[in-house]
Image (tube, rainbow, N blue to C red; front, side, top):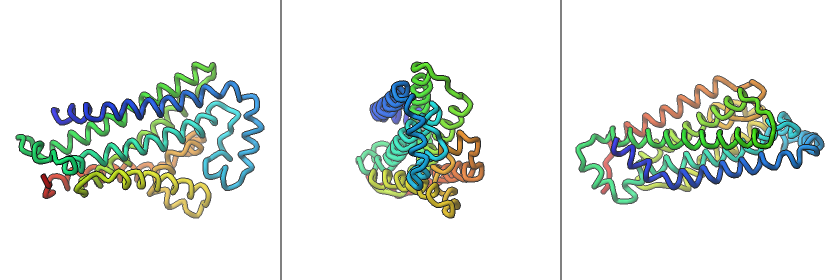
Length: 261
């Protein structure tokens, strides 16, 4: 597991920074809730009546007047978008980074198969995504308790679980892209994550675009749907399959690729 440990060490700083920023912002948002909770009923009613804007972000279904509705809207967007960027950027650098950084020649001279190298890199990617999500869950849940509110732990765990699956899916797809490129394209990774995010907003705005929910993981990882107990199982399973196919494609392609030194 030498490559696995090396990848964890190489990504440790990035993991800590992203986790601190995302978890810190989540804690700050929850910390603001007690001071504004008295006026949140009026704010919730105002947002619920803003038509397309409120529908895009699920504010027509999630009430700001409750801690869970506030958490799903504010903290959910922070972790949903920030976590996707972290997964996409980290995955993009796993394989293409070796060629772009001219370290592939050194790595591939060792008596380790390419498949094992790629597999350990993929395992490290999954471990870092899992670690960040567990830390953010602790920040979010701990902050709710710290401000004296009662969390609905079943809904909270279900929501964070869908966010984890979403990030693993994006990580798997960007891992496949990384195996196809000669050097890391972080703009492509961020563009792909942002594109999927805005696709999710469009589905909320226009119900006729619901079939796109099988493409973007933001459809099944939407707080309004999860908290209402309406997590779409079909898109979720398709998303898991797409992530697994992306990971498999990355492993297959890297094993047969003409790697530049």
